[in-house]
Image (cartoon, rainbow over all chains, first blue to last red; front, side, top):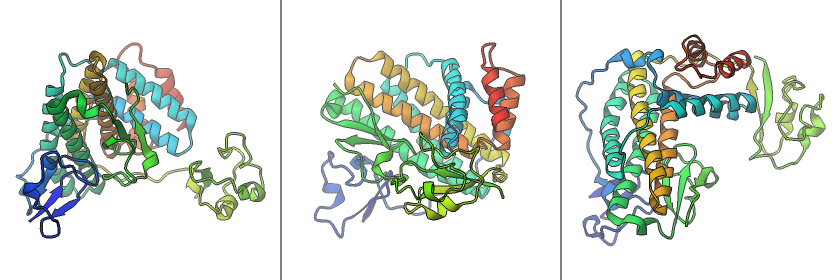
Length: 210
Length: 161
Protein backbone atom coordinates (compact mmCIF):
# COMPACT_ATOMS: atom_id res chain seq x y z
CA UNK A 1 0.00 0.00 0.00
CA UNK A 2 1.14 3.56 -0.73
CA UNK A 3 0.31 6.43 1.65
CA UNK A 4 0.40 10.05 0.51
CA UNK A 5 1.07 13.10 2.66
CA UNK A 6 -1.95 15.36 2.12
CA UNK A 7 0.24 18.41 2.63
CA UNK A 8 3.36 17.98 0.51
CA UNK A 9 2.58 14.87 -1.54
CA UNK A 10 5.40 12.75 -0.05
CA UNK A 11 4.71 9.06 -0.71
CA UNK A 12 5.36 6.37 1.91
CA UNK A 13 5.47 3.07 0.03
CA UNK A 14 5.11 0.02 2.28
CA UNK A 15 6.90 -2.13 -0.25
CA UNK A 16 10.04 0.00 -0.23
CA UNK A 17 10.22 0.76 3.51
CA UNK A 18 11.41 -1.37 6.43
CA UNK A 19 8.34 -0.68 8.57
CA UNK A 20 4.77 -0.91 7.25
CA UNK A 21 3.00 2.46 7.52
CA UNK A 22 0.39 1.16 9.96
CA UNK A 23 3.15 0.15 12.40
CA UNK A 24 4.85 3.56 12.49
CA UNK A 25 4.45 5.29 15.89
CA UNK A 26 1.90 8.13 16.19
CA UNK A 27 4.77 10.54 16.80
CA UNK A 28 6.16 9.78 13.32
CA UNK A 29 6.37 12.86 11.10
CA UNK A 30 6.52 13.37 7.35
CA UNK A 31 10.26 13.51 6.51
CA UNK A 32 9.67 16.26 3.96
CA UNK A 33 7.26 18.73 5.61
CA UNK A 34 6.92 17.61 9.24
CA UNK A 35 3.19 16.78 8.95
CA UNK A 36 1.69 14.29 11.41
CA UNK A 37 1.13 10.63 10.59
CA UNK A 38 -2.61 11.36 10.59
CA UNK A 39 -2.11 13.70 7.61
CA UNK A 40 -1.28 10.67 5.43
CA UNK A 41 -4.06 8.99 3.47
CA UNK A 42 -3.93 5.78 1.41
CA UNK A 43 -3.37 6.68 -2.24
CA UNK A 44 -6.88 7.18 -3.46
CA UNK A 45 -8.93 6.81 -6.56
CA UNK A 46 -10.87 9.65 -8.19
CA UNK A 47 -13.15 11.24 -5.66
CA UNK A 48 -16.68 12.13 -6.73
CA UNK A 49 -17.78 15.71 -6.37
CA UNK A 50 -21.50 16.25 -6.43
CA UNK A 51 -22.78 19.05 -8.62
CA UNK A 52 -21.90 22.26 -6.77
CA UNK A 53 -24.34 25.16 -6.86
CA UNK A 54 -23.00 28.66 -6.35
CA UNK A 55 -24.78 31.82 -5.23
CA UNK A 56 -23.09 34.35 -7.49
CA UNK A 57 -24.19 37.30 -5.36
CA UNK A 58 -20.94 36.88 -3.43
CA UNK A 59 -19.08 37.83 -6.63
CA UNK A 60 -20.20 41.45 -6.27
CA UNK A 61 -17.25 43.71 -5.49
CA UNK A 62 -19.57 46.05 -3.56
CA UNK A 63 -20.30 43.26 -1.07
CA UNK A 64 -16.68 42.58 -0.10
CA UNK A 65 -16.17 42.72 3.68
CA UNK A 66 -13.45 44.63 5.53
CA UNK A 67 -11.59 41.34 6.09
CA UNK A 68 -11.66 40.45 2.40
CA UNK A 69 -10.61 43.99 1.43
CA UNK A 70 -7.69 43.87 3.88
CA UNK A 71 -6.40 40.80 2.01
CA UNK A 72 -7.05 42.45 -1.38
CA UNK A 73 -4.99 45.47 -0.32
CA UNK A 74 -2.01 43.59 1.16
CA UNK A 75 -2.03 41.43 -1.98
CA UNK A 76 -1.95 44.51 -4.22
CA UNK A 77 0.79 46.01 -2.02
CA UNK A 78 2.86 42.89 -2.66
CA UNK A 79 2.09 43.21 -6.37
CA UNK A 80 3.50 46.76 -6.27
CA UNK A 81 6.60 45.62 -4.36
CA UNK A 82 7.32 43.04 -7.05
CA UNK A 83 7.18 45.79 -9.65
CA UNK A 84 9.49 47.98 -7.55
CA UNK A 85 6.80 50.56 -6.85
CA UNK A 86 7.46 51.25 -3.15
CA UNK A 87 5.26 54.37 -2.91
CA UNK A 88 2.22 52.52 -4.31
CA UNK A 89 2.95 49.50 -2.08
CA UNK A 90 2.97 51.78 0.96
CA UNK A 91 -0.40 53.32 -0.01
CA UNK A 92 -2.01 49.88 -0.41
CA UNK A 93 -0.54 48.83 2.94
CA UNK A 94 -2.13 51.88 4.55
CA UNK A 95 -5.53 50.96 3.06
CA UNK A 96 -4.98 47.39 4.30
CA UNK A 97 -4.23 48.64 7.82
CA UNK A 98 -7.48 50.62 7.74
CA UNK A 99 -9.49 47.54 6.70
CA UNK A 100 -7.76 45.33 9.29
CA UNK A 101 -8.66 47.91 11.93
CA UNK A 102 -12.38 47.98 11.02
CA UNK A 103 -12.69 44.18 10.63
CA UNK A 104 -15.21 43.08 13.30
CA UNK A 105 -13.84 41.08 16.23
CA UNK A 106 -14.88 37.48 16.79
CA UNK A 107 -15.73 37.02 20.45
CA UNK A 108 -14.57 34.11 22.60
CA UNK A 109 -12.26 32.65 19.97
CA UNK A 110 -10.15 29.77 21.26
CA UNK A 111 -7.98 27.07 19.74
CA UNK A 112 -10.97 24.69 19.55
CA UNK A 113 -13.15 27.09 17.54
CA UNK A 114 -10.21 27.90 15.28
CA UNK A 115 -9.63 24.19 14.75
CA UNK A 116 -13.27 23.71 13.70
CA UNK A 117 -13.02 26.68 11.33
CA UNK A 118 -9.92 25.20 9.68
CA UNK A 119 -11.68 21.85 9.30
CA UNK A 120 -14.64 23.57 7.61
CA UNK A 121 -12.21 25.21 5.17
CA UNK A 122 -10.61 21.84 4.39
CA UNK A 123 -14.08 20.45 3.69
CA UNK A 124 -14.99 23.30 1.35
CA UNK A 125 -11.87 23.17 -0.86
CA UNK A 126 -13.08 20.25 -3.07
CA UNK A 127 -16.23 22.20 -4.02
CA UNK A 128 -14.25 25.31 -4.91
CA UNK A 129 -11.88 23.13 -6.93
CA UNK A 130 -14.84 21.62 -8.80
CA UNK A 131 -16.07 25.11 -9.71
CA UNK A 132 -12.56 26.16 -10.80
CA UNK A 133 -12.31 23.06 -13.00
CA UNK A 134 -15.68 23.47 -14.68
CA UNK A 135 -14.76 27.08 -15.50
CA UNK A 136 -11.35 25.91 -16.76
CA UNK A 137 -9.74 28.41 -14.40
CA UNK A 138 -6.25 27.09 -13.72
CA UNK A 139 -5.31 29.99 -11.44
CA UNK A 140 -8.28 29.28 -9.18
CA UNK A 141 -7.45 25.55 -9.28
CA UNK A 142 -3.87 26.32 -8.23
CA UNK A 143 -5.12 28.42 -5.32
CA UNK A 144 -7.13 25.38 -4.16
CA UNK A 145 -4.08 23.10 -4.32
CA UNK A 146 -1.84 25.42 -2.27
CA UNK A 147 -4.57 26.64 0.07
CA UNK A 148 -5.87 23.19 0.92
CA UNK A 149 -2.36 21.90 1.72
CA UNK A 150 -1.48 24.90 3.87
CA UNK A 151 -4.84 24.75 5.66
CA UNK A 152 -4.32 21.03 6.39
CA UNK A 153 -0.95 21.87 7.91
CA UNK A 154 -2.47 24.64 10.08
CA UNK A 155 -5.24 22.32 11.18
CA UNK A 156 -2.79 19.54 12.00
CA UNK A 157 -0.57 21.92 14.03
CA UNK A 158 -3.50 23.33 16.03
CA UNK A 159 -4.73 19.77 16.71
CA UNK A 160 -1.25 18.80 17.86
CA UNK A 161 -1.08 21.82 20.13
CA UNK A 162 -4.42 20.91 21.68
CA UNK A 163 -3.03 17.43 22.48
CA UNK A 164 0.56 18.26 23.44
CA UNK A 165 0.27 21.79 24.81
CA UNK A 166 3.23 24.13 25.31
CA UNK A 167 5.88 21.41 25.23
CA UNK A 168 5.22 21.00 21.48
CA UNK A 169 6.84 24.40 20.87
CA UNK A 170 9.14 24.81 23.89
CA UNK A 171 12.50 24.25 22.19
CA UNK A 172 11.82 25.00 18.60
CA UNK A 173 11.07 27.78 16.14
CA UNK A 174 8.06 28.39 13.93
CA UNK A 175 8.56 29.42 10.30
CA UNK A 176 6.05 30.84 7.81
CA UNK A 177 6.53 30.69 4.05
CA UNK A 178 5.95 34.29 2.96
CA UNK A 179 4.71 33.14 -0.44
CA UNK A 180 2.05 30.49 0.29
CA UNK A 181 1.68 30.63 4.09
CA UNK A 182 2.97 27.11 4.82
CA UNK A 183 3.95 26.80 8.49
CA UNK A 184 6.94 24.70 9.53
CA UNK A 185 8.14 23.76 13.02
CA UNK A 186 11.91 23.26 13.38
CA UNK A 187 15.25 24.91 14.13
CA UNK A 188 15.72 25.83 10.48
CA UNK A 189 13.27 26.36 7.61
CA UNK A 190 13.09 23.60 4.97
CA UNK A 191 15.44 24.00 1.97
CA UNK A 192 12.42 24.47 -0.26
CA UNK A 193 8.81 25.08 0.71
CA UNK A 194 7.05 21.69 0.49
CA UNK A 195 3.93 23.37 -0.92
CA UNK A 196 5.05 26.17 -3.27
CA UNK A 197 8.74 25.19 -3.70
CA UNK A 198 10.34 28.58 -2.99
CA UNK A 199 13.81 28.53 -1.35
CA UNK A 200 14.43 28.74 2.42
CA UNK A 201 15.12 32.49 2.42
CA UNK A 202 11.44 33.11 1.66
CA UNK A 203 10.57 31.75 5.13
CA UNK A 204 10.20 34.10 8.09
CA UNK A 205 10.69 33.11 11.71
CA UNK A 206 7.87 33.94 14.13
CA UNK A 207 9.51 36.08 16.81
CA UNK A 208 8.77 35.99 20.52
CA UNK A 209 10.37 32.71 21.55
CA UNK A 210 10.99 32.65 25.29
CA UNK B 1 5.63 47.58 -26.23
CA UNK B 2 7.27 50.17 -23.98
CA UNK B 3 9.41 48.54 -21.28
CA UNK B 4 11.43 49.56 -18.24
CA UNK B 5 14.31 47.77 -16.51
CA UNK B 6 13.85 46.51 -12.94
CA UNK B 7 16.52 44.93 -10.77
CA UNK B 8 16.02 42.02 -8.37
CA UNK B 9 18.27 42.94 -5.44
CA UNK B 10 18.33 39.34 -4.20
CA UNK B 11 19.97 38.17 -7.44
CA UNK B 12 22.28 41.17 -7.94
CA UNK B 13 25.93 40.18 -7.42
CA UNK B 14 27.24 43.74 -7.89
CA UNK B 15 29.18 43.00 -11.06
CA UNK B 16 28.19 46.53 -12.08
CA UNK B 17 28.05 45.84 -15.81
CA UNK B 18 24.70 47.67 -15.83
CA UNK B 19 26.55 50.80 -14.75
CA UNK B 20 29.01 50.47 -17.62
CA UNK B 21 26.43 49.94 -20.33
CA UNK B 22 23.53 52.22 -19.37
CA UNK B 23 23.61 55.23 -21.74
CA UNK B 24 21.50 57.34 -19.34
CA UNK B 25 22.90 56.60 -15.89
CA UNK B 26 19.55 55.11 -14.82
CA UNK B 27 21.20 52.15 -13.06
CA UNK B 28 23.52 54.32 -10.98
CA UNK B 29 21.42 54.99 -7.89
CA UNK B 30 22.19 54.98 -4.19
CA UNK B 31 19.34 52.57 -3.34
CA UNK B 32 20.08 50.15 -6.24
CA UNK B 33 16.58 50.67 -7.66
CA UNK B 34 16.78 51.58 -11.34
CA UNK B 35 15.55 55.13 -11.96
CA UNK B 36 12.32 54.80 -13.96
CA UNK B 37 12.46 58.42 -15.05
CA UNK B 38 15.89 58.01 -16.65
CA UNK B 39 15.35 54.48 -18.04
CA UNK B 40 14.40 54.50 -21.73
CA UNK B 41 13.87 50.75 -21.90
CA UNK B 42 16.76 50.02 -24.27
CA UNK B 43 17.50 46.71 -22.50
CA UNK B 44 21.33 47.02 -22.57
CA UNK B 45 21.61 46.48 -18.81
CA UNK B 46 19.44 43.33 -18.80
CA UNK B 47 21.49 41.91 -21.69
CA UNK B 48 24.80 42.68 -19.95
CA UNK B 49 23.89 41.50 -16.43
CA UNK B 50 25.79 38.26 -15.69
CA UNK B 51 23.55 37.27 -12.78
CA UNK B 52 20.19 37.67 -14.51
CA UNK B 53 19.10 40.19 -11.91
CA UNK B 54 17.58 42.70 -14.35
CA UNK B 55 14.28 42.12 -16.14
CA UNK B 56 12.51 44.27 -18.69
CA UNK B 57 8.90 44.76 -17.64
CA UNK B 58 6.14 46.39 -19.68
CA UNK B 59 4.92 49.84 -18.69
CA UNK B 60 1.37 48.87 -19.69
CA UNK B 61 0.35 45.40 -18.59
CA UNK B 62 -1.98 43.31 -20.77
CA UNK B 63 -5.61 42.78 -19.70
CA UNK B 64 -5.95 39.95 -17.15
CA UNK B 65 -7.57 36.56 -17.71
CA UNK B 66 -11.31 36.96 -17.31
CA UNK B 67 -12.89 35.49 -14.16
CA UNK B 68 -16.40 34.03 -14.17
CA UNK B 69 -18.96 35.18 -11.61
CA UNK B 70 -19.18 31.77 -9.99
CA UNK B 71 -15.41 31.43 -9.57
CA UNK B 72 -15.28 34.90 -8.01
CA UNK B 73 -18.19 34.09 -5.70
CA UNK B 74 -16.61 30.83 -4.46
CA UNK B 75 -13.20 32.42 -3.96
CA UNK B 76 -14.67 35.42 -2.13
CA UNK B 77 -16.49 33.13 0.30
CA UNK B 78 -13.36 31.11 0.94
CA UNK B 79 -11.40 34.33 1.54
CA UNK B 80 -14.03 35.41 4.08
CA UNK B 81 -13.51 32.19 5.99
CA UNK B 82 -9.74 32.72 5.89
CA UNK B 83 -10.20 36.24 7.19
CA UNK B 84 -12.31 34.87 10.07
CA UNK B 85 -9.50 32.42 10.88
CA UNK B 86 -7.00 35.27 10.83
CA UNK B 87 -9.13 37.33 13.24
CA UNK B 88 -9.55 34.35 15.62
CA UNK B 89 -5.80 33.63 15.60
CA UNK B 90 -4.99 37.30 16.24
CA UNK B 91 -7.36 37.44 19.21
CA UNK B 92 -6.11 34.18 20.70
CA UNK B 93 -2.50 35.42 20.36
CA UNK B 94 -3.43 38.69 22.05
CA UNK B 95 -5.30 37.06 24.94
CA UNK B 96 -2.86 34.27 25.85
CA UNK B 97 0.24 34.50 28.00
CA UNK B 98 1.49 31.08 26.88
CA UNK B 99 4.55 31.78 24.72
CA UNK B 100 4.14 28.72 22.48
CA UNK B 101 0.45 29.33 21.74
CA UNK B 102 1.16 33.00 21.13
CA UNK B 103 3.76 32.18 18.48
CA UNK B 104 1.65 29.47 16.88
CA UNK B 105 -1.32 31.85 16.64
CA UNK B 106 0.87 34.59 15.14
CA UNK B 107 1.95 32.05 12.52
CA UNK B 108 -1.68 31.08 11.82
CA UNK B 109 -2.71 34.74 11.60
CA UNK B 110 0.03 35.44 9.04
CA UNK B 111 -0.64 32.24 7.13
CA UNK B 112 -4.42 32.82 6.88
CA UNK B 113 -3.77 36.32 5.52
CA UNK B 114 -1.34 34.96 2.93
CA UNK B 115 -3.88 32.34 1.83
CA UNK B 116 -6.62 35.00 1.62
CA UNK B 117 -4.30 37.25 -0.43
CA UNK B 118 -3.65 34.41 -2.83
CA UNK B 119 -7.39 33.71 -3.14
CA UNK B 120 -8.26 37.37 -3.81
CA UNK B 121 -5.46 37.60 -6.37
CA UNK B 122 -7.25 34.90 -8.38
CA UNK B 123 -10.65 36.48 -7.72
CA UNK B 124 -9.87 39.43 -9.99
CA UNK B 125 -7.22 41.38 -8.10
CA UNK B 126 -4.01 40.10 -9.66
CA UNK B 127 -2.57 43.35 -10.95
CA UNK B 128 -2.49 46.66 -9.09
CA UNK B 129 -2.95 48.31 -12.51
CA UNK B 130 -5.79 45.97 -13.54
CA UNK B 131 -9.45 46.87 -14.09
CA UNK B 132 -10.53 45.08 -10.88
CA UNK B 133 -8.24 47.20 -8.72
CA UNK B 134 -9.25 50.44 -10.45
CA UNK B 135 -12.97 49.74 -10.14
CA UNK B 136 -12.55 48.83 -6.49
CA UNK B 137 -10.67 52.04 -5.65
CA UNK B 138 -13.30 54.12 -7.50
CA UNK B 139 -16.11 52.33 -5.67
CA UNK B 140 -14.42 52.87 -2.27
CA UNK B 141 -13.98 56.59 -2.97
CA UNK B 142 -17.62 57.07 -4.04
CA UNK B 143 -19.03 54.85 -1.24
CA UNK B 144 -16.53 54.90 1.65
CA UNK B 145 -17.20 52.08 4.18
CA UNK B 146 -16.84 54.49 7.13
CA UNK B 147 -16.38 58.25 7.45
CA UNK B 148 -12.68 57.87 8.28
CA UNK B 149 -11.84 55.88 5.12
CA UNK B 150 -8.55 57.31 3.77
CA UNK B 151 -10.02 58.46 0.43
CA UNK B 152 -6.96 60.61 -0.23
CA UNK B 153 -4.69 57.55 -0.30
CA UNK B 154 -7.10 55.71 -2.61
CA UNK B 155 -7.21 58.72 -4.91
CA UNK B 156 -3.42 58.93 -4.97
CA UNK B 157 -3.28 55.26 -6.00
CA UNK B 158 -5.79 55.82 -8.81
CA UNK B 159 -3.58 58.60 -10.16
CA UNK B 160 -0.33 56.65 -9.89
CA UNK B 161 -1.58 53.34 -11.35
